[in-house]
Amino acid sequence: RNGSERSSDDGYNWRKYGQKLVKGSEFPRSYYKCTYPNCEAKKIFERSPDGKITDAVLYKGSHAHPKPQAP
Image (cartoon, rainbow, N blue to C red; front, top):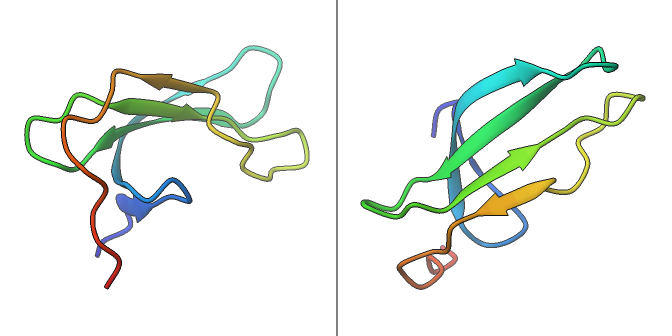
């Protein structure tokens, strides 16, 4: 798996597709898409002021498939 794909605690696989600077924060907001073909689920992550990744700020859409099975 390359650095642009990551699993999350929610059990789905995500691919980073962008980031954007957030006003008032030195850390960018990161945008992820589900890696499953034709799935339109997306989520957005932000970093807290101490640099740690917070929970998903926002989920958009819903998964059109079951969660992938754990290896």
